[in-house]
Length: 279
Image (tube, rainbow, N blue to C red; front, side, top):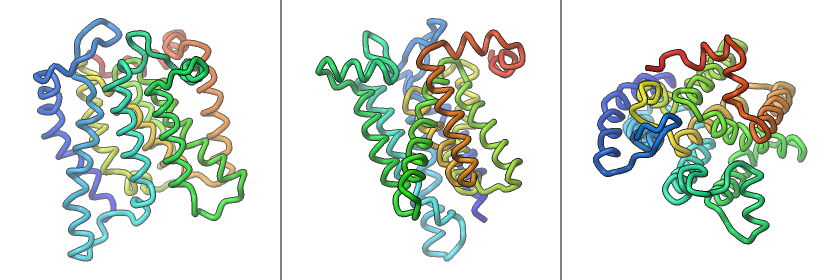
C-alpha cells in the first residue's frame, strides 16, 4: 500500500494549500511575477509542509500498526528532498527571490560572486545541495565515477527545475512529464509509491500557480527538482542514468547561456503545453 501517500497528500494539500497561500498574502509575503502581479510567495514552503503533515500519520501507522504504507527507501531520500527545499527557502527569504535586487543568478553569477569575495545565498544553496546529494547517494556500492555521475544527476536535475520555473506551472508540468515517462517506460508505479507524499502537494500547487494565485519560489522549484532527480536515480538503470545526465547537462548549459522561455515560445507544441491550464 505504498501508493496511499499520494492520494492522502493530495487531499491534505487541497485543504491546506489555499489557506496557506492566503496566509502568505496576509503576512505580506508576496512577490511580483513575470507580469508584475503580486502573488503569495513562496508557495513551496506550504507544499513541503503539507507533505510532512501527510507523512506524520503514515509514519506512525507504518511503525505501530505494522502496515506497509511508506516505501523503505524513502528514509534514504527524504533528507535530500526536505533539505534542498529548506535551502531554497533560505534563498527565497534572504537572497532576493532568485536574483531580484541585484542578487547573482545562475551558476556563473554565483561563481562570479565568490570570486569577488561575496557568498550569495545561491552559492550556499549549491554547496548545501552538493553535500546532501553526496550523502544520500553514498552507500549504494557504486564505482567512484558512477557515484559522482549520480550525485551530478541529482544536483543538476534539481537546478534545472529552478531554471524552468520562470512561468506559472512550468516546473510542475516538467515533473509530470518526467513521472509519466518513467512510469510508462519502466511500466511501474514505483516513483509515485516512493515520493507520492511530495508529488501530491505539487499537483495542488500547480492549480494555484497556473491561476497566478501563488509562486513556487526556489523552495518549491527545489522541491520539484529534487523529486524529479530522485525519480531518475531510482527508476533508471546505469545506462539510462548516464543518458539522463547528458540531457540534463545539455539543458542546464542552454539555460545558463540562452533563454529557455524564448526557446519554448518559438516551438508551437511546447508553447501550447507551456500555456495549457493558465488563466
